[in-house]
Length: 262
Image (cartoon, rainbow, N blue to C red):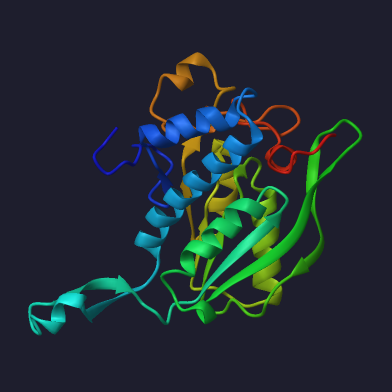
């Protein structure tokens, strides 16, 4: 683990894998079938607070500011804090990809609303689902309905979809935005867990996209590949099973988060 809490890897400069023991422990508990639902949701929120703080701290535009503190009343000059802050003109669109993205997107939307003007932070909703063939193999993504609040031209688009598996959902969502709602200034994908396959698909599809994730799962890779630095033998890494679920992963998070019975 390095001092920047970021894992060294070979996936390129647009991928940031956060590396600290809090994330490792939280994700281990999120993936465990023994973790109660109420605890899982609390853990999920905590992971997304951290992912948002790190990603926005690096990706959102900044300006220099001079802000009088409460001490300015008695120390007019020295009581003014000067430093770098987020540009209050920045516009951010958080994309909720239903169902797994409901909780993460709400966390990001609410937290951003505490540091940016309310009018500049928007929460969109995309109703998307996997399309599978008769053998259970994922063959596409269905975008059957959406609630999108306008253009994303010049904005920062955040996609806090927890499981970065095949990349199909992210690609379909962004193509929908680019075709119908303008071109954002930057795009940040925030999968809680990603696979090597996901990273290759989304990075190849969108040269402006960056990824922040708490873990890259490549559990179906051979022993020799697993012994190497993540991304060093990217073409040999595998994190998806035959039904396109992440291994070791955390299961079907859309069902788990919403406590579905079937």
